[in-house]
Structures are given as C-alpha cells and as structure tokens.
Length: 134
Image (cartoon, rainbow, N blue to C red; front, top):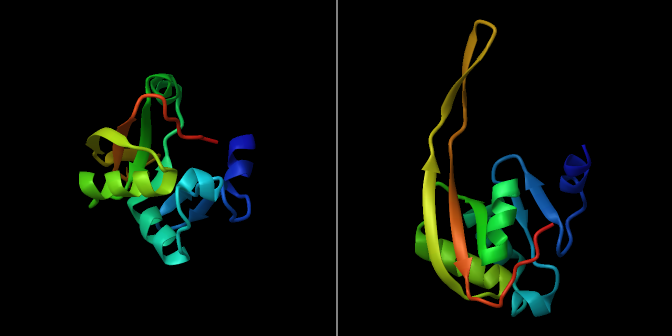
C-alpha cells in the first residue's frame, strides 16, 4: 500500500505524475539533473513517450550495471525514446532494447476480458552516470 500512496503525491519535480490515459511519468528532481529548464509543453511531450520507470526486482539488479527499464508509448521509436531519456535525465544513452508485451486473456468467473499490452524499453546509459529512481 505504501507504493500506491507514493504514486498519488502532488505534482512537483522528482514526483510521479499519474493520469488515466498515459500512465505515470517521472519528472527530474532538479534543473541541474535535467541539464536545462524544460517548458511544461516539453515535459508533457516527453511524458507521452516515456510513461514511467519499471521498478521490479529484476530491473533494480540491472540498474547496478547501468541498464534502466521504462514503460514507453507503443508507437515510440528508439530515437524518440533516446532523446526523451537524455532530455529528462541529462544522461548519455549508449543502447536501447525495446520489446512489445502482448495483451493477455483474463477470466473472472465466466466473464472474459483482456489485460492491456504495453511496450517497454531497456536503456543502457554511459558508465559512471546514474538515474535516481524513486
């Protein structure tokens, strides 16, 4: 339950921003970390490409070698993901791997439904750089 409470915080730098359509987007902690000031329109445009970081046991172990995982828009290209990560977090992206997770059939009693599919990107950044995940 503590994780859910963190997701419902007010919008400010470093907090998670949640919306029904685009999922959650993470804003940089400070302007020094972001590299330069971004206008609100740029933040929204970048948040539509990079929805939120994926925080699991596997992704936290990958962070030790400089690989960070994000949920991204299904239509986003690798070039768009690269520029969004570099602008949001002021890091140099070395490599990007993307994968489409297909939708899955779910049953609740006799009712049949579908769990949404999504796209995730595994981003390797330059050695010595880090991204603060919350």
